[in-house]
Length: 390
Image (tube, rainbow, N blue to C red; front, side):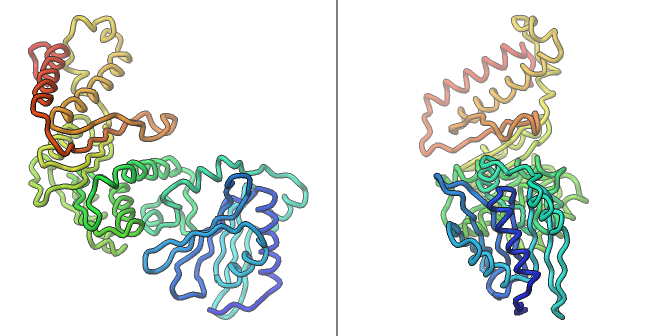
């Protein structure tokens, strides 16, 4: 819909520029664009060097994202954005406001008076440069359709307060995916999400490869819960994520039809993580990214008199078993020909389950080294468990 110039838009654009200059602006989402080739544009402030700029991301219908920095003449460029979109949502440290225009041309603005009052009175907190930079470093903006449908974001693209931790977790996981992109095929990739649960990661990883990286992806997601699988399958169809397939079943009994390029898993409970790692390594996955959950098995079976001074204290016993279990998993992966490590997934203040195991298949298998590692793995098991088997 072609918008006509109005005093209402002029005032809102002026308020937007004031919020930016006062460093209270967090983000603005310009949707329902005049251009038929675009979906929306997201604008937010960022410190680049010594300059404080507006950074714009325009999402197009061909699944591409275009970036540009607005370094000067803010008023003119912002006015062009305001007059080419039928809905505008502005988020600041002193409140949010929304602009809408109906097909008949009726304009509605909500929340602008509170922002104006705060700016006039000088009663506001600025948005820190660190906060702005952190927001812009995320691979996902919050406006993605799958995040809205999963309840992570509201209809305007604002991440819900109770979902901030999950949002950061998803973005951090995608950073780990991006760090191994050079270990994966360039044109088409087979991905398995084992113990996928509600599939937050499944949808995010699919979106990353398909829409951000423009890589064809076939993704199989497996979980035991029938109702969850049905929900996710229906959601994938609604989103047009046609390369996703959801299967209800036990991952232990599932036979992978294609060699996995990437296997992911988020918080598979207890020995389910071991099953994930074994399934992935046995099938020669190029990359494995797995975040363990609870660690009960070793806690129940540890039998090592040399460590009694630790294990007789329940809290310390659990911490020891957590670390030992993941270390044994990494050792086993190394013996199977992987370069493996334990990395931090997310700030421990968000969740204590903040470890991710990353394993990358080596191009060549050092058989002698593998035998040494297998022997070491067996010795560690014997030390921790006595003659028992885990």
